[in-house]
Length: 405
Ligand code: ASP
Ligand code: MG
Image 1: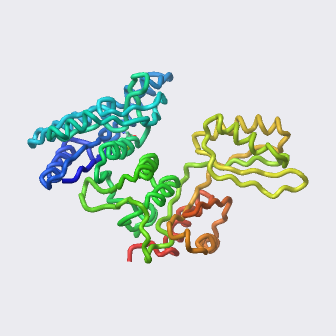
Image 2: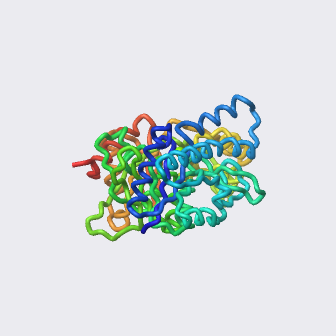
Image 3: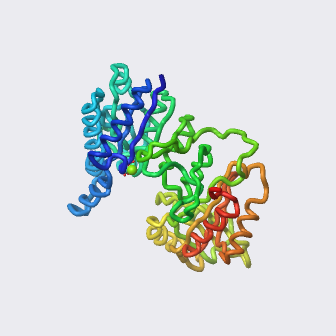
């Protein structure tokens, strides 16, 4: 008998019909002799709808009230899914994040899990029931309801899987798994049979939308084996696990892209110790997450520093960097929000030179100019013009032989 956590995303529980299908799938799993814990997201676009309502009612959005509001979406879904299970004779009970033992910090709208105390969920399992947990929520150390952030249900699922020592955590969604690149850009993109935690983490950090990056981090830290699969076809999807040493491992496993960052350039800053520290400490204090950073060779004692920041943070980052530029006597600050980042990822890169060279040659052959470069042990990323990124993705997917054959 295995213990399986099954998480269903918004589209998987979007209406009554979908909920009945989910219930039947749970029934199949139970008949196979396995125990199931369910985690559900809010139905369909419910979270967006609740956020929209909040915007309509007020310009003031206290974190505590926002979390009370948003978590109502998952609460509605979990009670309905329970009823769908009862309807086909499966004894089940729903649990809010708090009831399920998710203790979080006070950081409303993006709370972090501090501890999971799953005694009620365990008791429910021991009594032969199917516990259904509302995703993306918990209770803070101050006893308030908290929301774990967008995509937080994936994290709920991974965390409860770890807390209960489940055998697998299945993340059901509306696609059939993790792909070698975005299938909307490259129709021949291939579903990966398996991918390592490290690779998937790099992928989610550079544009792969699912699963949520935080959940992959959690899974990697605690070694929770994931299975990303479809709640529409129910076919086997992508397994996410520790890296296996495999002689035939591809050097490059995936190509990702994202348009979520903007580039800022601080021109003509004095080239002396402490300047970069000052600039990036100021951004850190603003909670701006800086990604790529490039500093030019200095000429005549001054240099340029370019870096990328998330689009949403650009106005704040610009304002404060401008002030700092004046203070430092720098040349000025400019921003470009039409950039994109294209990345190639593969664990095989660790032991195979030449990936960066092939990537740059491929971009050159398409006439794509590289504005910035960054690398990790298993990733090479380039910032390019936003209009050219899809071409770049297609060419790279092709050159590294990732398409379906
Ligand atoms: N419903 C929430 C969202 O859309 C949480 C989740 O689905 O993970 O972000
Ligand atoms: Mg969701």
